[in-house]
Amino acid sequence: DTEVIQTPKHLVMGMTNKKSLKCEQHMGHRAMYWYKQKAKKPPELMFVYSYEKLSINESVPSRFSPECPNSSLLNLHLHALQPEDSALYLCASSWGLAGGTNTGELFFGEGSRLTVL
Amino acid sequence: QKEVEQDPGPLSVPEGAIVSLNCTYSNSAFQYFMWYRQYSRKGPELLMYTYSSGNKEDGRFTAQVDKSSKYISLFIRDSQPSDSATYLCAMPGYSSASKIIFGSGTRLSIRP
Image (cartoon, rainbow over all chains, first blue to last red; front, top):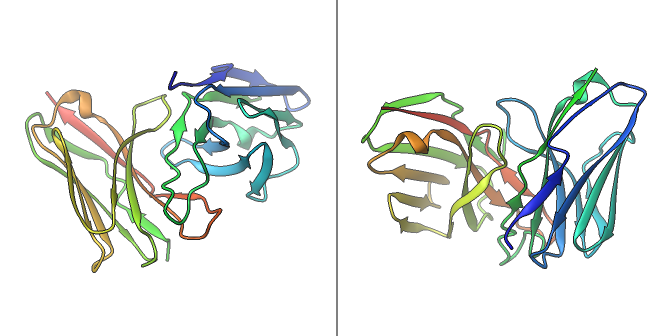
């Protein structure tokens, strides 16, 4: 199984709502990532988990709260979002973190398209 | 200066043409060089990666790295409409727990 599965595919929420994005992979990867992608822009790293521990937080506002319940699952909890947070949220996984001799090849899901009204 | 620079295009070529996509980078410590392809409304997928300088070929795709010029290229031969996508170059940073650094992506359209 070489898939990264993200749910839901589409989400519309108001600024006062609380919602969650979910991601799972069964490839045995030990690193999982959340990226945000705006139209016609490259993916922008938000969070990285390595062995279920938060490894990188790219100074993301606290209205985004990641959670890694186990090595196969990654959640992104959303609360009090702004309209400018509307974007495609991509989950990715890799065998390990990039660096040194490790390419950190990323396997991406299809994304969750979020619209904040 | 951005660590990775890529012309965003859009680039439109006729079917069957040879396509050249390019990136420049500033950090001479980069060792691995990757190309991701992203179709509209999908997540990126790894197309090819190369280590250090040289060429790597996979079917109609050739990745080329020139570390002396800090310049990488992706060539697509006999381009097909199904190659229409955004192509992102990417490089893992050198430190032990670093992130993948993406170029801005080039939007490519192959006209039938």
